[in-house]
Structure formats: structure tokens, C-alpha cells
Length: 335
Image (cartoon, rainbow, N blue to C red; front, side):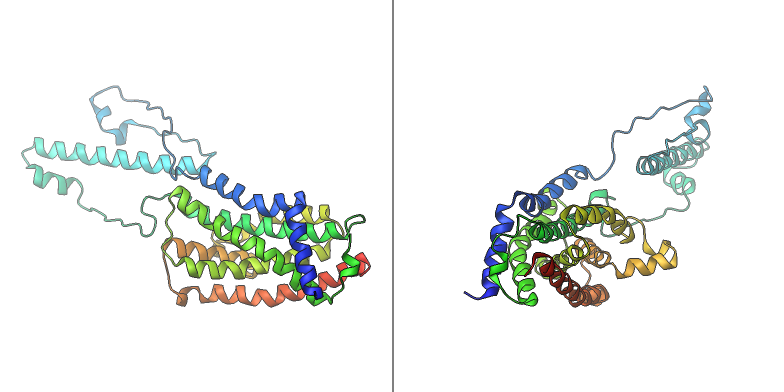
């Protein structure tokens, strides 16, 4: 049995038998998928309690546009925006009705009164997410972040745990070059992680009814590129840290800034120019944008190719980073 195969089988056993690694890689994707899907399953905020204050106490109070003062709790922007739009629409409808009734009282027919009360009738057709379902917009990004996080954490912690005294076992006797060891470990991790990632990325759509208008085959192909890259980056992070705890701290510290800079919850073009540049080089930015567009708009490759190109460019960069990390790691374990 050659060194590559020995390292491959050894890494498979470690991932499946080490509770710390298994809890991160095997449980994490499904835990996040169920959690995020459940939180955003309603899609829209409903049953918001409101209080109507009639400040006129007369027949004029029927004209809500002049009789109501609306005070919103702006501490929660989602509730505030939704409530303000709903109340504005309700008041506008009452205003039109009041005008139409006054016109009809003066002898104008109903057919003439309604267009006169609302001379401009806008036709608004929201594309791709007509119900403004918040879950359809945010869920895909959160699942991508979760897959990135658990993969990086699992690989970085696994490599550093093996370097600690008492966890090396038969490693010095397995042999192999740094490149062969890296490929064996990455392949073993991918064999376990990729099927789970395929299920986890689809779970929120199938279980909670989110639309996916693109090709799942294309999505799986791009997810494979993204996940292999994350495995390699995880090994690269392990090369920067001398223990699994330090790796975990670094990843947790970076997770929120990385997600914020993807431009998913706040558009990148609204950021300062230097942050836009940082956002562009983050691979998660492009994978989230690819998945969002595939899920909601089903755009073609002609639109997605700049994002795909960045992901593909990251793969050799991540491989070189991981190779350097494994060489450094082998010195620490005395191989």
C-alpha cells in the first residue's frame, strides 16, 4: 500500500472517529441548515401589534391621511420598514376611497370617480421574489457561510490536533511527500464533506419551500470547487496557528467580517472603495452571488463567469497555501 493510500485511509478514520472533528464536519452543516431554515421559514413579518390614535374625534377621522399620526419603533429596521409600507398603503387606499366618495356625492359616476381619485396608477411588478420573502433572499447566503465555516474549522482543527503531543500515533511511520500527504488528506475530507454539503445546500430549499430556478447539476459542480477550496484554506489556516484552539479563535473572529463584506446583506457598491476591493477578493462573495442568482433569477453563464473565474483562480492559490502549511506541520510533528 503506497503512502497516499495509507494517509487517505488514516484521515478517513480520524474524521469519523474523532468526536471533535466529526461534530464540526458531520453535524454542523445540518444543524445550521435546520436552524436558518426554521428562523426564516415565515418569510414575512406578520401580526405586528399596532395602536391607532384618533386625534380628530369627528367625521373627518374617516380620512385617515389627516387623522392619524404613525409612530414606529425604528430600533428594528425590518419591522419598521414593513409596518411603514403597510400603513402608507392602507392610508393611500383610504384617501383614494374618500376622494372617490366625494366625487360620487357630487354626481360623478363610479367609473369616472375612481380614475379621477387616483389619476396615476403605477404598475409595480417585483421580479424573482414577488412576495418579498425575506427567507428566499437571505437563506442561501447563510447556508453558504455555514458550509464555509464548518469546513474550515474541521480541517484546521484536524490538522492541528494531529500535531499535538499524544495525537500523532502512527503518523511518523506512514511516510510520503508533503504534496502526497496534502492530496490524501484533502481527498479524504472531500469524500466525507462533499455529500453532506450537497444535502445541506439543498435542504432549506426542499424542506422550507425556497425556490431554486437554476440547474442543480451546475450548482453542485460549483459547490465542489468552493468546498475543495475551503478544505485547502482550512489547511492553510492551520499553518498559521500552532493549536486547534488558536485556529478556532481565528476562524470565529473572521467569520462575521467575511460575511459582512460579501455584499449579501449590504451591497458592496455602497461600501467605501477600499472595502469594495477587499470584498471582491473574498471567495465567499462570489459563491454567494452565484448561488443567489441561480436560485432566484436563473441567469446564464454569461452573467456568472466573472464570479466563477475568481473561484477558479482561488483554487491554485489555496493549494499553494495548503502545501506550505502541510510542510510546516510536518516539521512540527517530526516527519
